[in-house]
Image (cartoon, one colour):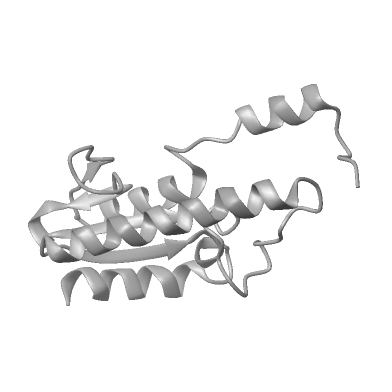
Length: 138
């Protein structure tokens, strides 16, 4: 099966995808700040370079894109029909790296909160933020 886009268009589209300051990440950051939580971003010395670090609570937050981190059972995680083997390897590597980072953080005494992109959709966001607040404080 061939791609619906030309190689140049696909390359351009992929180059526009950010790894930092994504819309889901900005929603969580705005919520945390508004509710008095202070945090650091993308701390390089911590395994996995967590998206958000709450030093006061010794808690890290990873905000995962459902596609990029292989969110099983999620409608936003669909394996592409082109270059399927390459994509499965790419996503599998991301999952492997996530697992290693989480293990290292847990061994270092950090609490880990994982938020999926689908949990920040309009119908889910309120419940996600209530749960997030309780996970940080509790």
